[in-house]
Length: 196
Image (cartoon, rainbow, N blue to C red; front, side, top):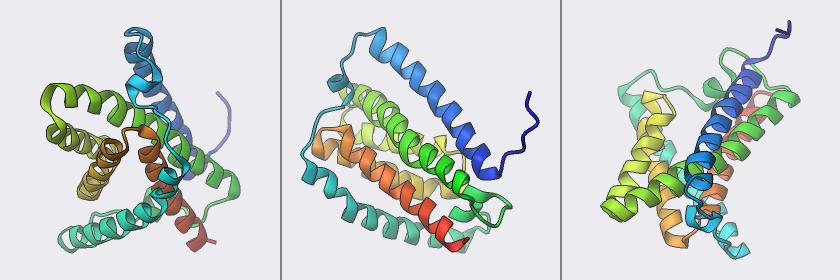
């Protein structure tokens, strides 16, 4: 329609917004509107500010654990993409507009929509029917599969376990969304800083 060439980062950001927006609309329609569920039913329960601050050290721990997993998987497979390759493709740097696209998609929209869908709707549904352990494992596995990057699935699975554990520990999606957002934001800013 429009003769505009978007960078890989802008394409990734725009594509993510469209995909996550579609999932959010489906979740809103089927779970919230159709079933008359409240925000609290989905897990959007207020927490204290210190709870959200606790996500900073947990983010550091998650990044370190996942770094070990990625290095271990890399020893057996040469197909493990780096964060730079995931965000930039073949490009060598990130322009400020691209950085904003990536932050919007990866550190704002993805944690909110993913949190509501995986740990709000799906986790709560499975927990009622199959128990806490099954719900944590299944939602973590589906979270990893949904990213569509097989070599990163072990680290994404572990990250999904952490996110589900945080929801279980605090009884709210907000801390898990904060952890997810901080994790993604850290990756985006590290890639930005090393490509300047």
